[in-house]
Amino acid sequence: MSLACGIVGLPNVGKSTIFNAVTAAGAESANYPFCTIEPNVGIVDVPDERLEVIHSYIKTDRVLPASLKMVDIAGLVAGASKGEGLGNKFLGNIKEVDAIAHVVRCFTKGDVVHVHGEIEPVRDIEVIELELALADLDTVTRNVERVSKKARSGDKESTIQKELFERAQAALEEGTQLRALEWTDVERDLLKPLFLMTMKPVLFVANVSDDDMQGESEQAQAVKAYAERTGAEMVALCGDIEGELSQMEPDERSLFLEEMGLEESGLQRLIQRAYELLGMQTFFTAGEKEIRAWNILAGDTGPTAAGVIHTDFEKGYIRAEVFSVDDLVAHETEAAVKAAGKLRIEGRDYVMREGDIAHFLIGK
Image (cartoon, rainbow, N blue to C red; front, side, top):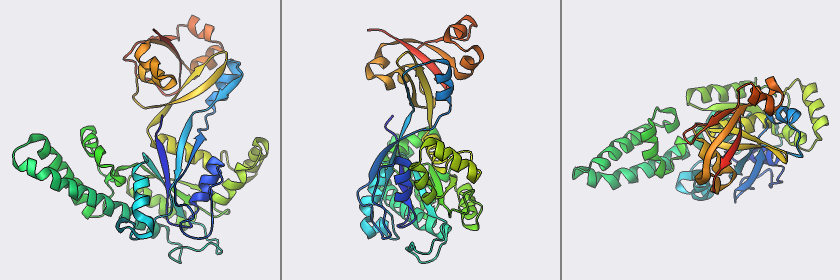
């Protein structure tokens, strides 16, 4: 899948530090605004303990996780919707991603300059969200004007669009993020060509101090409360600590996390939540050569899943043999799964389930 999650935030909140840690890509990270101008793009592995579970029963040479595209977008500033701080370029980058990881500064390290002087995370969030809303309002207003003439002439489709766009326009004028409203699937499809940024799902990333790894500080809790009010989610992590963890060997990293009282790193939570935010789910293929996790969207069918492996497979799909990780654990071998009647034969209309292990029969 080519879906991408964009990392956004004000300058100097730790975006590039977190991006560097999550991708180990070495993007420039410095104590001044706009050290990221062109977006950095990284492909990251999605942590999934089920891969090792499968590998414990099906021995193979390679185990390959699913992946996720992360994009580090330069820091936005107040006035971005009017072009301030290269705003037009940055807003264009945000329009191109499918979900937003909004990094918010909650750490109090004094040697890193805050663009607004004081650490007030909700104010910082509102600066960014106002700019996105203003840019969206401009887009929606232009589209209301575009469809109004046809709507006045009685065109049914334009009338539906006009009413929908005016609803979005009214919400944006009140400062409401469009993601916080209820939309039908049909309405979402009609709004999709507008590439509205406030429609995108958002994960707030509270970048906390190294003594607040659980995100219990007043600043982090304020971000959590804001996320709950506005239809978003939140994860807390310490960018500096995550940067150190990303350079450690697996055994050393596990020991460090254990000493910190953590079951997993903040980056693991970030990646998994971003993956879920994009509406993705995972299926597995397992054979003699490799065990591999693949990305699909929730609701995708068997042929679509086969097409992720190779585009020709979608057209040539005949059927799939499917079982679950739990089936494999319970019966230990694929042959035993089949003997127990747990191996399902699924046709073209089958909707893939999270965690399916699948073998596809493809015709010529």
